Length: 158
Image (cartoon, rainbow, N blue to C red; front, side):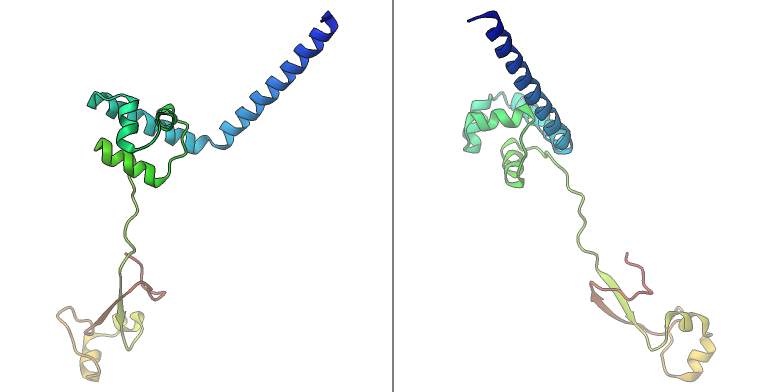
């Protein structure tokens, strides 16, 4: 090989290497959010493994996966499925993620023959005299309650 050929090969290798580095950098940037979460989970998995006195091979056996899969998990570069997270939580007996989803709100809908504005602006005396609605202890008309997931526009969802 001549020096000129060697120089060409070296430049081609450097160009290819820098392209790969740029691609890898762009991939990390594009996937930054889930990579951070994956890294946090991996730290907890490593701590749990250490606390149990296990190694990665024992975790792989307990999960029924390969050691390579566990290696990906503890490197913090695994895009976890909920199934994998649940399996890790069950085996390690430790919560790895916390969901804060609340159940769908139950909305209390109050049926009235008058609008809410009319009910609260009408005096108790007028309601009593009209005898169209019964008076409750609070002075408002007796309410009929139904539970639904849709609220009228004038009610706020609790």
